[in-house]
Length: 202
Image 1 (cartoon, rainbow, N blue to C red):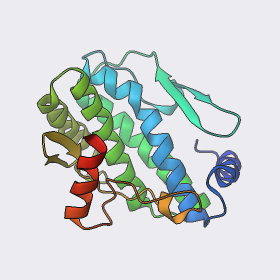
Image 2: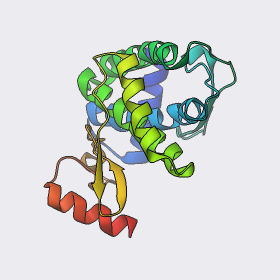
Image 3: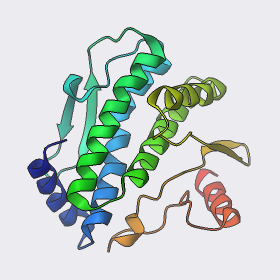
Image 4: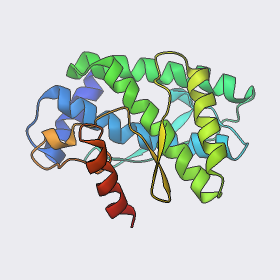
């Protein structure tokens, strides 16, 4: 994931999935999708009190021939709690965002914002599964603090009876030929966003 030649090949595959779009857009969409998969298992394990090492060298990735990431997992136990987890996650985010920025031209701050939304979404999902959303929100803040100031603080909002992530990032999927604006996209009026999220969640 930090090899420039490999990532260029991934963006070529992304172009087949999403259509002709600027490199910056393809890099952003790719990282939005990949970061969510990359963080799913490590954050779920952290939430459940059995943390694993999220470092790239500890992860096993399952990638389809068309370039889509479908699974990522680490089986290396990690001591040191949230602080050590965040320190290692900082190294992951720093290395991958620099590579994506260098290859695609996407802005590093925008890529870090995508990372924080993936952290928030994955922990909120774990909290919903455990009926403990409050702990998920607290843990998201602790992880962000441990990662460091480059990572924007995760934000959440109540939409009707639902707790949702108040996104800091735009995935730019609507800048591709196949995409439309996400219901939770931050680049729309808050009332419209809330209306669309309510309709989506029922």
